[in-house]
Length: 279
Ligand SMILES: [Zn+2]
Image 1 (cartoon, rainbow, N blue to C red):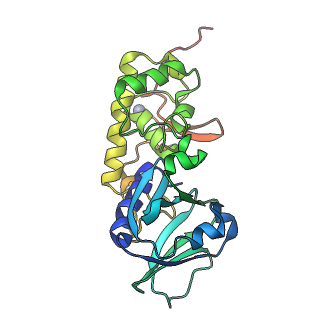
Image 2: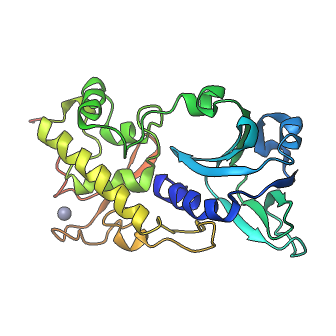
Image 3: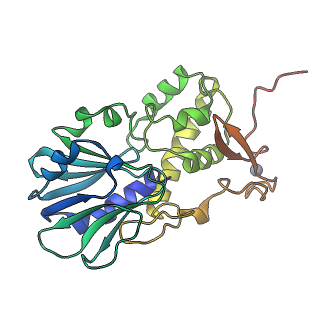
């Protein structure tokens, strides 16, 4: 699933290709994609100029004139691509956006069909629960705020990092990578982390996400940016999807375990569980 670095990269590559262009029409090819706004809302986008493209958590926001916003969640396999109007459409194309300039059209493709679209009016952050419920952005949050919500939570740190209402945008890849970087076992209860460990995690979170954005995200299967290019950060993964391979720091085989139904990759030696029960 595209996480913060991938969605950020898509937003950055999509914006120069759509900004200032006027929407001529939006064709919805897969009805369940549209979760809010209805067909009337989509029709209301006609004639509106695109003002910019942004990201919030793992969601992508296309802001248009008249206070309208299209919000896409790419979920597992959502992709944006540009094509000429006469080019054949892939069978997984779920939506097509045409522009008045008649140049290329924007297509939303989604093989697994979990992605969704919200067509909003007014302040998008207030207009729907999907956005209103999101926690702070990991690249904006200060250390004090980060430390405060970690101290309040007794759940496992890995699950906490994945909880979008606590902190928005982090998924399985980057949670595993930042916990390895901070030398923290994924199963440790958040509230039991010491001050130093919280500071390490905070620094690792910023470092890993910044680096991943600079490398334009991770391409494991089908993630591409809006220019159709793959990311590079998969070559920097130290634990994610490396089960059984040697830890880059100590050589111990990387282990995988399920935490809250999600696979978690970690080095049992570099990321020790400190509070071991005595037998
Ligand atoms: Zn190790």
